[in-house]
Length: 346
Ligand code: 13P
Image (cartoon, rainbow, N blue to C red; front, side):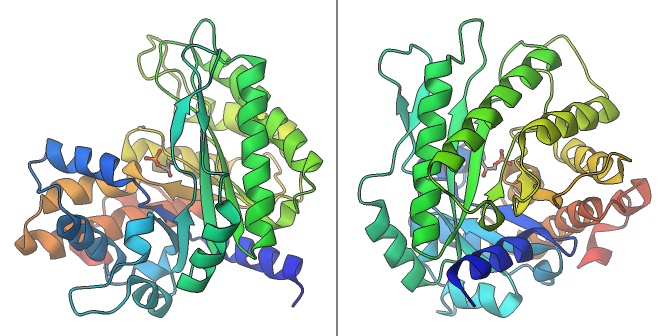
């Protein structure tokens, strides 16, 4: 298979057949902060045990096509010394890796961030491929306020995303391109729609300029919603419609697939939004699925709380959420699926 058809095949396998992506690529700092809030030890072994719990959930491969890991996790093994990469491959879950190194303030643009990680990237990609990664992720963040985003920040972040995507494809790895318009803020849905459209427009212009093969990428966008601190509310149908409109206007038809982030939205609501988009009458050229972090993990993490005794319950809860989202990716999720007894799912 040629390089480009191999990339396209990998991208497609991540987003089709009613499966989606489990994002567990929190940096050690972010993972520790979530542990600290629940009084879980902030240690390498606790992070390892937690990721083992998630990745070895019985049946997970039926709903999850790939999992995005953090550098530390890609190198870890189960308590029985099975490398996570092997356990994932055995479960039918492709290993992915976050390759950006986080955000720093964008000079000259108060309140705006730029994502770093381009320095030395080709070398790291080469190593990740040898370690077993098949796809990668880079997240740009775009904050909405009265003064932001500026066109300059949108351009700078789009350029970094495009340079990363080109480097990943050159290394034979599928890039997940994530321009996240943050849900934080008091803005209404219309403002989120305007900013999301502008961010997507910049990203696809930059990808084109870098000659990135669109069939071999996955776009990971936010949904179009009112800000989390907004007094405005939007129905599930309104979110689905506004999100589809923004995507249809700006995402070329040959993009390999779209896998949404959850962005701090409630987990059940995240599933309902995905279901509404997949059930919409509007014709769309790409598969739409999930690449959720918090919306998949939150309930399982709360059930586990660092206790080995709670592993089966936490795994059953993750399996249930993953099954609900996989149903939504096929447009077959409803209250009856949500209400299935948790232990009956796995
Ligand atoms: P959330 O679904 O929690 O937003 O995480 C997805 C992700 O990968 C953010 O980069």
